[in-house]
Length: 310
Ligand SMILES: NC(=O)c1ccc[n+]([C@@H]2O[C@H](COP(=O)([O-])OP(=O)(O)OC[C@H]3O[C@@H](n4cnc5c(N)ncnc54)[C@H](OP(=O)(O)O)[C@@H]3O)[C@@H](O)[C@H]2O)c1
Image 1 (cartoon, rainbow, N blue to C red):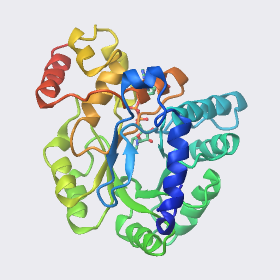
Image 2 (image 1 turned 90 degrees about the vertical axis):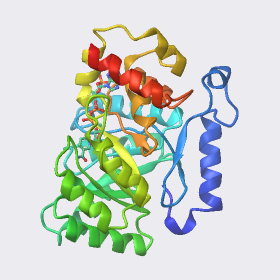
Image 3 (image 1 turned 90 degrees about the horizontal axis):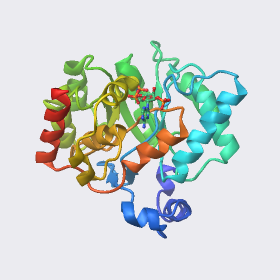
């Protein structure tokens, strides 16, 4: 968590401490072999973010179940230990925000956290109240990024979010959509508003954003967060019935999840993908995709052809 006004020496020291703690500055033999964590700059600030983050829809909506909450906290711990920063949530995700707050309380909020949430309410006037409730549930002093979820009442909510950013109560502003919904209007908002981030669905089989949204994000200097990298698990389940091509080793992929993530984050407009998981091994595997070489354009075409052929 960083305040826009103090994103200087103090946050740099925090980040250095966090990265050293997870072995990036002093890599273990395993890290040295995998290469450093791959990061991308947020276009509007230059701040670096790891190319893999963590989603929370459904996976963290576990209510009061103590065992399940502890399992989510363990996923968060493994995520931070692997150098992860961005956790994404929304008031739409049931108890997920509260469960994140539980995990952060248990772990002691890591300074590296990049807290990403959304505003999702039809009344613009009630946006600030909802944001404050989300902040309370997370237990953080402020969010790094707030996005208007699925463009709901976006005109009114963007006014609130830009005002918060101007006051130093928020660092970045964005909008989200998923599964190709309302891309025309989405692109219009991108053209008209000084957004820091957009969040869209992009994966090896859902590539509609390549035509208009991703190039526009590059032109406008906006970061891109990718949701539904695994089509909510359907893609990994489907791919796991088939062998990984032997040439996946050339880009250091030993699992389908890594293959799918490396495809996404190798697009030059993408800042990070945010796979969700309830499983510690999966979060480690996903974070491993943020190491080693990424596919070039020729390899990306080969990846698409292979998957489309299955
Ligand atoms: N409009 C919006 O703003 C919007 C819409 C959709 C999503 N989102 C955001 O994007 C995030 C990601 O999207 P999503 O939750 O729809 O789905 P997703 O990340 O595409 O898929 C999640 C599923 O993938 C499985 N998985 C994760 N890592 C795996 C691995 N290494 N190997 C095999 N399976 C793995 C998980 O199962 P396990 O638990 O077994 O690992 C989980 O069921 C959301 O959580 C949310 O934060 C935003």
